[in-house]
Amino acid sequence: MATANGSTRNGAHGVDGIPDPERNAALHTRLKRPLFRALVEDFGPVWFTWCMNAGIIAIILHQFPYQFHGIGVLSTIAFMIDFTLFILFSVIFLLHFALFRRQAWRELIEDPSALGLFASWPIAWMTLVSFIALTVSQASWGGHAFTIVAYVMWWIGAAWVLGTLLFVVIILINRHEASHAKLPPVIIIPTVGVATVATIGGLLSSYALNISARLAVPVIIFSFCVAGIGLLTATVLYTILFHQLFANGWPEPEQIGTMFVFVGPMGQTATALQMLGTAADTFNRFGGYDKGTFLTMTAAMPLDIACILIALMLSGFGVVALILAFSGMLFRLFRRELRWTVSWNAIIFPTGTLTTSMLMFSIEMNSPFFRVITAILLVFLLIVFFVNLGFTAWEIFRGRLLVVRENPRVKKQLQEEQKER
Image (tube, rainbow, N blue to C red; front, side, top):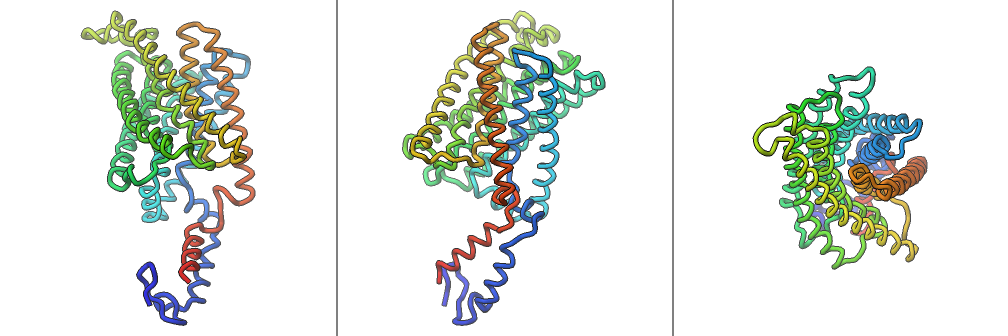
């Protein structure tokens, strides 16, 4: 007779003429995988959030208003963690698609969470651009050559991030209907990526060693454009995601950490605007270019002031989103449903974007208040980073994360066949 999936069952001959004992034995053989296959087959873009998190902490440490002896070393260590993990994870992720092409592609485009997290890869790349611009180009063994390297990497990253945003939006339109499917908060990460392009563009134009106005101004202009793309696209997604919150309540306990993603678009866009305004005015990139009516020293100062004003508004919304995220965590805590999951990796980078915005305010206003807020948020980020590190190491040691020998796809198939019987 016919089974639910269209195959045929014929008494003792099982499914499609294969005896049930033989089929079950084959499935159970596939259930346990070698360690390397388990690592590569299940590897997902969520692991690039570790690179993002290390990168944003490194940037904050490098620009931290309370400098002390050794903080530069700590920043470099964080950047090196970012760099090492990015190389390692990129190799594994490329192997994932090379060895499991159809399965990897299908699992990516059919899972909105994987689609949103797919942008973590190019965002991690952009944090490496900041590493080269801030640290390597300024090192005694670095120099202007690494400024050019960072410049080229930035344009590559800009194309990569924008391509990822368009890819995610098109796939969502083709395969997912927001009215029928509940979109996860991480779907907004590609817009954070676009804002990150603008932020790193401002940082590159300001701090890369001996970057000329001729090189910096195209980056600044393009960064303003992509900041608008990220902010307005995020606004559309905010509408959908907040509607889901009002209709369905807080995310499930396993996903409550993703509430912090709501901070990202506003925090990163606010940082981007401040970085770009500073590059145009304080670092005199517009004055050095001096063409037309906009790209001049005269226009740079009011532009910088306007960027600070808009950044204040966006940061205000970011603070509200941060309070909502903490409220969701407390809600689950009071109901004794709060427990660590991989979604806690989504806490650091979005909160870090708001921290960098506060840091920029502390510089622009010479404000002790914003310096203290920056310090408090940095301590929070470091605590969460090490909590995540501890739980992640423990889960990997127990064989429940990263390298899980039991194949979840085969396990699901066995459970479905048992239900059919």
